[in-house]
Amino acid sequence: MKILQSFLPLSFLSLLLLALPSPSHQVPNPRLQNAFIALQAWKKAMTSDPLNFTSNWHGPHVCSYNGVFCAPAPDDGYVMTVAGVDLNHANIAGTLPKELGLLTDLALFHLNSNRFSGSIPHTFKKWTRIFEFDISNNKFYGEFPNVLLYLPSLKFLDLRYNYFEGPLPSALFDLKLDALFLNNNNFKSKFPKNIGNSPVSVAVLAHNNLPGCIPPTISKMSKTLNELILIDVGLKACLPQELGKLTNVTVFDVSYNGLSGQLPATMGNMKSLEQLNVAHNMLTGYIPGSICRLPKLQNFTYSFNFYTGEPVKCLKLKSKDDRFNCIPNRPAQRPPKQCKAVTAYPVSCSTGTC
Ligand SMILES: *[C@@H]1O[C@H](CO)[C@@H](O)[C@H](O)[C@H]1NC(C)=O
Ligand SMILES: *[C@@H]1O[C@H](CO)[C@@H](O)[C@H](O)[C@H]1NC(C)=O
Ligand SMILES: *[C@@H]1O[C@H](CO)[C@@H](O)[C@H](O)[C@H]1NC(C)=O
Image (spheres, rainbow, N blue to C red):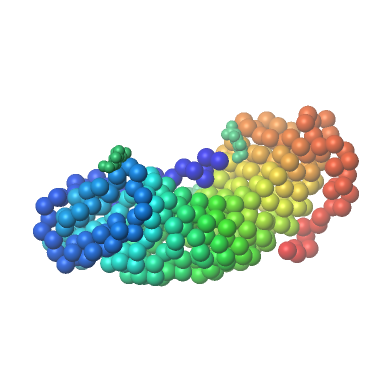
C-alpha cells in the first residue's frame, strides 16, 4: 500500500542539514572527538557493508564521513558538531553500540533500509536534540525501546518494518510527536486507550496485534490528525460516533479488522476525508449517505463486508469498491448463504460495548 511505503518529505531541518557541505578540515574539538569515538565503535559493530558506504570512516575528520553531517552546535555557533547521521539504503548489517550515545547534538538519525539488529542502547537518552528518529526497515527486535520516551525534542518516530514485539507503552501517546510509524512489527497489546492524547498528524499502527476498539476520546485529535492507518490491528465491535469530530483527517483506513455493526452516520462530518477504506470487516446494514456526500471523498473502499444496501451517491464516487457484500442487484456479491450467516444476527452499536 502506497501510504505505508512512502516517506514523509524530509523536514525543513533535514533539508538544511543535508544540504550543508561537510567541511573536511574541521579542527577536531571535544565534541567531534567524542563523535570519532562513537562512529569508530559503530564501524567496529558493523558486520557487513556491501556498498562500502563506510569505507571513508577513518581518521578524526568525522564531518567528511559518508552519511555524517556536521553543523555549528546549537549552544555554541563556533563549535562544529555532528548534527545528522543518514545511512538510508546502505544495506549495512550490525548493531548499535552504546558509544553512539556520545552523539549528544544529533538532530537526525536515519537508518532506513539496512540490516541492523539488536536493541536500541539506553545511552540514547543523551540525545536531547534528536528530532527525527527513523530506523525503519531493519531487523531490530525486543520490546518497545523505552529510551525513546525520554527524548524531549523527538517529533518524527519511525520504527516500521522491524521485529519489535510486546506492549506499546501508553506514555508513547502522550509524547508531543508529529508523526508516528509503528507498522509491520509484532507489537501486541490492547488498542491504546489514550491514543487521543497524541498530537500527531500521521499515525500508522497497521499490521500489529492491538485488539480492541477505537476509543471515543479519539475526538481529541481533531485539530491535528491528518492520516490514521489502522489496517490489520485486530479492531472489533463498532466504530465510535466521535469519528465525526475528525474534520482534518484526509486518509482513514481501518481495513482488515473485525469491525461490526454500521458505520456511524457522523462520519459524514469528516469534511476533509479523501480516502476511506473499511474493506475486509464484518460491517452490516446500509452505508450512510452522509459519507458519500463528503465533498472531497475520492476513493471509498467497502468491499468484503456484509452490507445490504448503499446509496446511489456512493456508486457515483470517482473510485469505489462494493464487491463481496450482500447488496441486491449488484455484481460480485457474496453467496446468499454467507450473507444470511451474518446478517441474521444484527449488531447494535448503541450499547457501546467493546
Ligand atoms: C567494496 O570494496 C571491496 C573491497 O575493496 C570490493 O571488492 C567491492 O567490489 C566493493 N563493492 C562496491 C559495491 O563497490
Ligand atoms: C484543519 O482543517 C481546516 C479546514 O477544514 C483548516 O483550515 C486547518 O488549517 C486545518 N488544520 C490543520 C492543523 O491542518
Ligand atoms: C482506492 O483505495 C483502495 C484501498 O486503499 C486501493 O486499493 C485503490 O487502488 C484505490 N483506488 C484508486 C483509484 O486510487
